[in-house]
Amino acid sequence: MESGSALLPHQFGPLQGIRIISSGTIIAQPFAAALAAEMGAEVVQVERPGVGDAVWRNIEFPIQGDNGRAVAAGWVQDRRNTFHVTLDLSTSQGKDMFLGLLTQADIWMESSIPGTYTGWGLDDATILAANPGLVITHVSGYGQGGHPDYLGRASYDFIGQGFGGLMNLTGFPEPDPPVRAAPWTGDYITALYCLWSTLAGYINTQRTGKGQVIDLAQYEAIHRILAGTMVAYYELGLNRERSGNAGGIIQPYDTYQAADGWVNIAALGGPFNRICEVLGLDPSDEKWQSASHTPDTPQWYEFDAIMRGWVEERTVQEVVATLNAAQVGCSIIMTPRDMAEDPHYEARNVHIEWEDVGLGKTVKGTGVFPKFSDTPGQVWRGSVPLGHDNDLVFQRLLGLSQTEITQLREQGVI
Image (cartoon, rainbow, N blue to C red; front, side, top):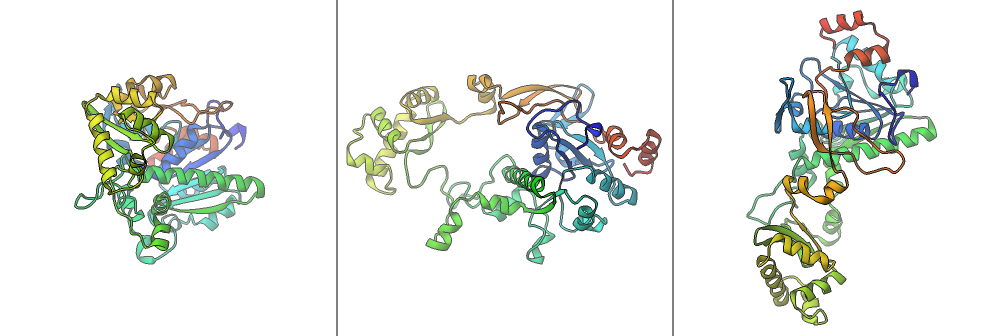
């Protein structure tokens, strides 16, 4: 990225100097770009004129702004620091302008049904010919290649969780139904895969000078985090099923109901001995040691009953204080109110305020992490309205005049 064409008001973070063009919708791919923007990358988000990313911009807890606009809470949280432009890529002018942006970028990431960009004359070969050092990341539900019956299917977070195998493991055993991991966990997992793989590609380009194309299927990103599920199937014939919150083969490793709420408790090895002492049990007794790792035995159920009885007789705060004092893993199941009022969240500055342009007011939400000692990320601007940065981006990166931009707007190209 040439300094004279920089869009950011100032440079910061470990990704400063990297320019990303993002043209996906909803969560999975745009959130990857937004995370990069919080770490100093210059991110230009391309949306459709007059429509934009209407679903994610407007659904899920809309907030009324001081300027009369309503913007969804998820959009306010996840679309900070990005420059938003509009382009109709189905027009020849829009395609040429988009290609012009890509020639000045380090990374292009998008999410669509395979073949969408090729239909606009923006196939990978054409783009890499224009910018041989570009890293291209395609995010789709089922991938760019594979069985033809799958490639054109629509996919969302919910669908990816089902096809990727996550929903089969979340929730309680039959006859209870499978449960999605919330909120939008499949999309956020895909976003993290999108960002780390794209940056891996970028690092390789720095060594070789050659760009490449990354094919990220949402269901594969979800499938990859199922730990040993598939090894257990292939090697042991185990068709793993839902088991609720319990660890299954060890205890205590579950949620427990206190007198006024819920906690989760986990104690393995040394902590198990300490929790025995808290419960008034002899940790050297083989009966209790066996109870920690032999499911469906009398001692297993006896220990579980003692554990649950002890928790039920106490408040959440009493349980948490007592077990943490004994160096046993235990936490309240935190609600948004709990997290907003918790002293550790406050001490680490987890929640911050920033100015949201879309709402025309100061908002408060989750900050930027992880924390870098020398090049920390930051929020320099909140979310913005559709096409907010058209003039800035198209003038500075494409050299268009104000008159040309006005004409393009009137023609519906931007």
